[in-house]
Image (cartoon, rainbow, N blue to C red; front, side):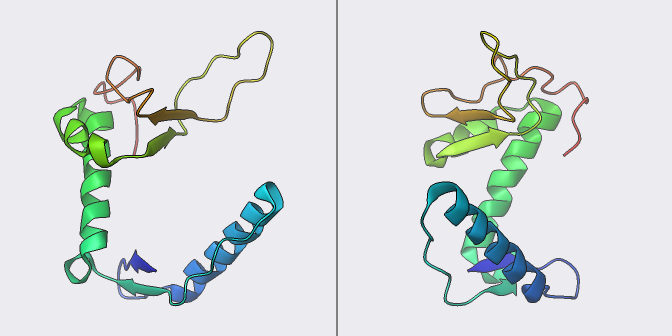
Length: 125
């Protein structure tokens, strides 16, 4: 597993601790453990193609949310499984508590019509 190094410290220990914490949460929630990564290393996007792809996906989302530019999001959409929007305003339905996030996927794509506030400068990313 490779994660992006920011600055001069690789922070591998902190990242491994976060992964182990998340693994325990997955086991508690779903009743199984996922396979542990054999190696966890940090690196720069120029050294790892996967990190370059992640940077582009995140940049496309940032352009969508901050500037309302959907063309980059439309370009990556065929390769996108789902997006969890933690800041979306979600109404409760029939007396139930609202979900803590909104899921966008192939059946419910993320579009400017579905996401209020896009490109209006009211979101910080």
